[in-house]
Length: 244
Picture 1: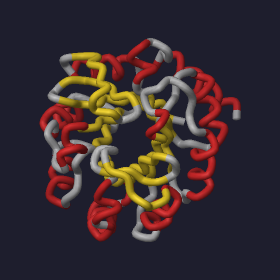
Picture 2: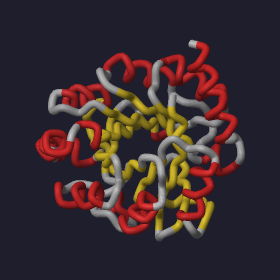
Picture 3: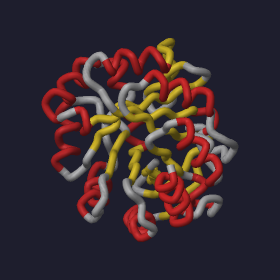
Picture 4: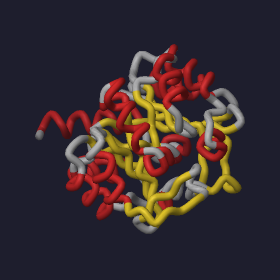
């Protein structure tokens, strides 16, 4: 299972939000490039970059920063936040982003997702399932829908999607624990890969997610506060995989 560091961008800085609340922000670094280099030096297998400004506004605001991270990274970089048109998705991919993460547009324009999978391959697309009480939230988690997380998985698999990222919003940034029940349900429902996020605060949590069958785990706050040592986490997960 991949341990994937999160780099959340707002106003050009690296931040973390508590439960997706833009009013409860902690700035961890002024220079996201410095943060990216830190995680790469620790052996990160992939970087998870989210344009929080773009997610809220509906169009990327930190695409150039994300592109610079991708250009200087020797591992895949996945980017989300405001990617809601084919033009923006293609631009991001052309800048070296390996996978675009799509959330709001998966609800509002599933045909866009279908065409993106067809034209650029399903491996270039990750659908983000951001859920609050089992229902999908959109527009940077500021608006709730009546679409169940499981229902969105079914819809997206029907148009060719193979990769999903599930986040329990109520646990994101809280350093509590993942919603194991929801993650397990999503893993069972998904034919492809399921990355988990939200509430991860220890290596034990990562091991439990691997046991459930998650293909990856996005870790944010716990890395920035030192609760999880990335090098140690990668080593433990690698050792676990070798013994299975």
